[in-house]
Structure formats: C-alpha cells, structure tokens
Length: 135
Image (cartoon, rainbow, N blue to C red):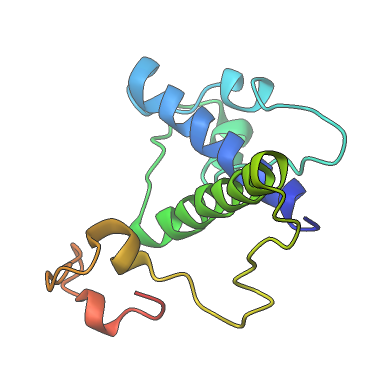
C-alpha cells in the first residue's frame, strides 16, 4: 500500500492527459495542472513537456511515447490488484493479498494484453515485445 500515493498520481495524470487529447486537441493548457486531484498523500504527476507550456504559454502537444505508457499501465494494474485484494477480504475472508513485489514476480504486460496467445507486439520504433524487459 505504500506505493499507492504515486500510483494514484499516475492514474490521475493519465485521466488528465486523456482529457487533453479528447477535449483540447492534445495541447497542454493550464487546466491540465489545475484539474489534478489534490488529496492527502497523492503525488501529483505532470507530463515532462508541460513545463515547456508553463514557461512559454505557447501550444505544446502532449506527446505520449511507448515508454510513457508503461507506468500508466502498471499503475492501473496495481490499483486493480488492491481492489481485488479488498474484494477477496471483504466478501471471501481472504486476508492475505497477493503481491507481485513480495513474490519477486514481474508484471507480464504481454500476458495481460494478449493472454496466452503467441502474438508478438511490435512497437513504432521497430522493437519487438520479445526484446522489451517485462513483456
């Protein structure tokens, strides 16, 4: 549970980036930072390019690279695990939740996205999922 303030900050940043993409043609505006959830313990995450917008007040696009997606995906998975563990405890009396960290197990992104299929993911940069750590 100690990582949740960062996890929720990443998820909130994903929400705000989505809003920029859908409602503002992917261009940063002051609302991006103003809409951040401010709650005890949640670490506010800002896209690295936002600082350029803040400095110049010029239209700067929110460019989301493949490597930017990993923390967002992992944060959502972590939050789902917390929810799953809470449901297990509340409804089934299971008090010991599963932890990838405690089990020293990587989150297998390829398996989450594709199940047990033999499909290989290719990224824009030509890198295949077989060469990406953790997939």
